[in-house]
Length: 491
RNA sequence: GGUCCCAUCGUCUAGCGGCCUAGGACGUCGGUCUCUCAAGCCGAAAACAGGGGUUCGAAUCCCCUUGGGACCGCCA
Image 1 (cartoon, rainbow, N blue to C red):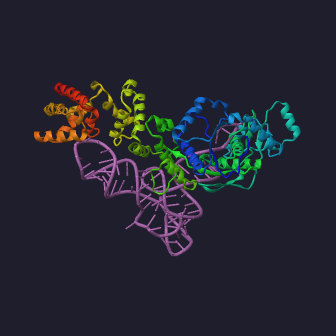
Image 2: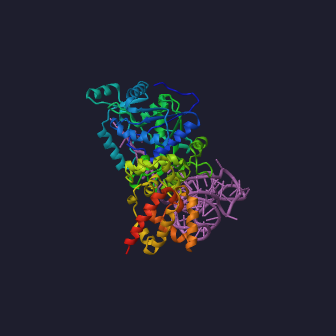
Image 3: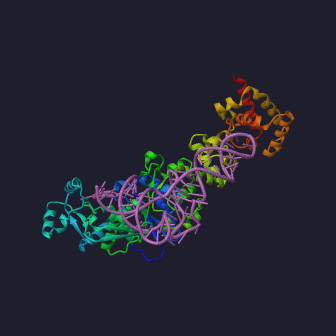
């Protein structure tokens, strides 16, 4: 792998560990990296931190790739896998060993664990005591002969401070006395996280490391490795964590945390992207950002340093906004998918409804529904060809389809029968029905709800005349007749 | 426990010493429109964690306290 630096174009990376899902917090980190790369014409690189070989399994990786694809965060290089770069880490560790910047450590995990426990019991910070740092070549040989396989530790300074210049935090100082000679290569030859990250970021020519806050404490260790390697460290930007409502780390018990779960719930990718961008980042008072605007306006300096709580209500508001303003045909296709996937409609029923009609359903409901799932559910009584598939809401029927309403509905049925197909449009239906009501000395108020319930099964929905137009004459009449039968059966 | 980070309405945030009797957005509540539900529009309640400094003047700068979070592995 060649070192690529100095091209003037930033190179950033998103480096998740393969966990089988992309957490919304991780998604935001990925988004910030992506926005930064796109804004500056740089490269967005994807890399999996899988020094645990067990983690390198397709089912742990694919959902992450799928999440990124769904969010539209396309990567320019990768995915790279640490598990495939083991020789590289060994090579670098070897170099540090030769230069005396690292040394082999023969302590066993058990010995170390005992020391750690003792330190904790004595309320001291558990730091490696440097036992193997002072070993003579003879002692090392003796230990090797015992069959001990050494890990490799880096030589850390024991005094002074290490300064991290962070774009969102400012200057952060760490006392080197808090650092110890930590392990960079395990006894089995695999690198530890901090070492692999630095070797990777260095060899991949990463210029800006934009990552979660939890890594801030790792930064001095990584800086130490950069120095040992004689490499120039990247610019660091640590973004705050995403928390749940109770101010703790967002986790499963708080509900949906994975990007794909939001997709399942009928959230639009542009809504999640917009929401995530505004979580911890802002541009004045603006709330709605197109992808292009985000790229144009994004800056690391405008990232807010404090942790942010994930607010589903606001996400839903944004989702509603994109449902209200999105292309009805595209939304219609998505709604059809959801109607089938969620079992609201059979594949055949969904196929029987044309694209045009799906788009129209979206237009009828877009102001009232906040997710694609809600849209799909609401669409059912509108698109099923069989009147028997219309489910009547018990409460709505009890309130609106009472026997005393029957004559009015009966009259309406008669009136509608006379409407020519060509005049079956919302404005013309409205004119006719209003005229007829006036002649009867009745008001629309008396008819609208009973009629709505009669033809859709529910007392809430789009405007009555739009509904009738959408259903069409034949369907409307059939449904009215069926409803009238229901009324007669009422006590 | 140690170290580090953070702190403006319930939530996301504007604010980077005077423009702040602190602005916007989500949510909440009220009104309006109306064939229902929504959407829209109008309006209301709602915050600078506390205490010291610095300064002619602090939400803004410094310190302490409190509260939250993160990290302390041959996990990542």
